[in-house]
Image (tube, rainbow, N blue to C red; front, side):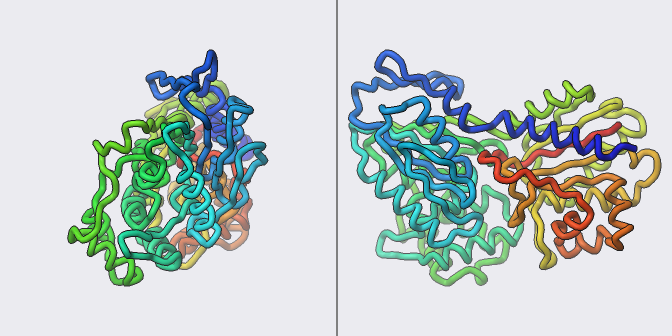
Length: 455
């Protein structure tokens, strides 16, 4: 069985999905300046602004794709653009002519994240009713734009905020739950940037890294009304049993907010949002559909399974394995050669102290299950799970493959998939047997893609 060929096809299919959400051409194609107006041709309804109303056009941004989005805006607006500040994950910067690019830490914020947030907030405070502000939003913004709560006579430190983030990432909370807490511990998230920008006209161009594209969760929604409350945030901390694990200052802030002692984040209907438009340009669904189209070009009978796959990574892997073996056995839900495409964002509950990410963990779980299903059917199957941003967890890999060729390589190296799975140690496992997919930073970010191929 030509495992290398299947891995190459899976990589090609994944790359097509990533290419479809390249933020530079997406921004460039969406913005149309002509006859004294700026038109936004995206989001299902064209929006237009009379440029004669504005003295300045300012770009602000945050997230892994921010620099590439800024380049697209510069190409469209040219000298009309007055300047701006965009914060990106370290290693994801690209040169811009008029927009200042700042690098910051992700997924756990540090002082670079705080400095980036201060720079963005300072630029935002200079906006007025004669300013049109383009806000470029992409995944990772929650950590990259880090402004710990500092209002109403209450202050959190960066160490407090970072400790809460670490606990949330480790406990198995999903992105919506994590961001609901982070919005309330921030001076800029949950619509608070919109408060600073008012009364400027604001259009946020968004690259979604959130399953279902919920605006309030993407980068914690700095220009979006916050549907969650202090009580919701406190409930998440308690539900995952980490109230006593997070710093006392953060826990006290959540408790006081839930008790009505502090003003909440701006809510739907607040007047500050009258001049704010939030538009999703790119999403996981767009990437998955493009990946599916490429699979069909390669000759695979393709089934798109959806872009809202969530849950424990190792459990989701077993579902994919079952479908793959059915395809191999009797051609359901697709006859061979088959390709199943899905997307979303799973979680990992840490049980060990190893190194890896949710995509590598999913591939390792798939591989462990494949070892129980050896034989003719298993040999037909190849699986890839990878992050569209090129970084899976705190590693230099986007994700990993699983097939019987890698299973044989693991046996030759004396590696047992289930031992490494128990330790959440997927990265060194795949690194030793050549099963990692390394793309480098892609400068986009729309969650993860899974590709199942059956020859």
